[in-house]
Image 1 (cartoon, rainbow over the protein chains, first blue to last red):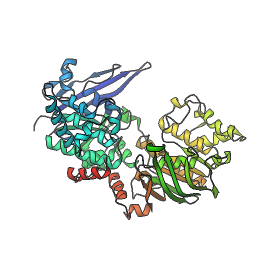
Image 2: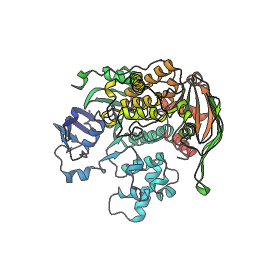
Image 3: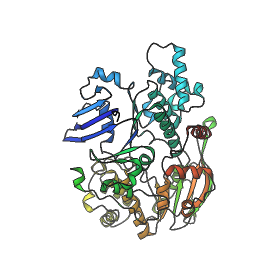
Length: 276
Length: 264
């Protein structure tokens, strides 16, 4: 078996608040290869903190520790800020939830994508590369879109611009934190299809962070379910329906489904033992 | 309970004018739960706000409980119809305790037995009397939404307007709130008008639904029809399929075509 892209062992993220220490992520271990790995959990389960810790983007009041955090040949756990500058964006990309807040509002989107290009390209070369990338994310009229400002883009278009920007430096791993939650359902599927296509064609690893079980089960290859900072279950996405952990089962049962006439949805009874 | 005929709502003037709701008609029977489904910007919340009296700039006819409504409402109207908003973090006054929030409608309508009413309504939404003197920041999202529901219920309305009541909540909390709404409807016979982008939530809660897009109602159907996929509109099928999750058979070519058509 080839070595996975990312290997994490006993990762901990702890935040210091005025009142207490919050252990957002506790001793989790996982690997990501050239595959789509979903991380699901409810708000506060530590899924986003995990994604940020890998890129060392944990805010100042948080501390990260790990027995092992390796990306390709690089030891992320021991990497300095200077090392990380060479990793962020160029080798590990991150797609955030809402293009409205993550694109620069006063800069044309094409120029923003161009910023991700390696330095030393001529203006026309850079423009060509950006246009090709916008086309790769299925933007039909790249010349027109290049000159738009973020507020002139729809949500789906903005998110495709973000994806284009992240793919320009040809990273090996993409971390997508709720990349489609701000989009309408019909556009969401299309953005996912583009992402799916690019990930499989370029042989990337994708860490897909989401609260939507249904989506993760149908989109990803493998799923990690987080609860209170721990991975409580790991399974193939296709087998999520047969999940073993009572938390996963409870979450699945609490979802309303079309065609299932139940008077009451089952609610989740949280067992304090899950959080131990 | 609700009769809406040729409702049109426009925003802006001159060149910037846009029609948010375009000549929409529908009726909701007393005791029924009716859903308005659509994506963001389709006009579903605008309809709800016009019904609730939060937007007076509309044309057409709205009848609620047999009475024709004017843009400006009398106080009695608000005893008849109450609204629950999407975001429980934004819809409660941060410096009012639960008691203060619930006292407000009682004072406005000059109701008696305030203590008794507050205790009863808190019990009804599954919060004990211990919650009465807490502030919103001391409550979880689900508890806040229960307070918002209590605030709507305390006037004993006949019609409840629900604007995405669970979309800001985690799924396990969503289940609790939806169950609470089911129980309230069972015990009071309230009429529900539920606005949501989530087809599965609407199909769980409602008897009938209308699918909206670009300010128009594309089609009206019963939940039974939806389940059996007896829809006429391609748009309804798109929403339906999207709610089932990601389909790996989607190819980029199809996607590009669909995105073009949607103008997204």
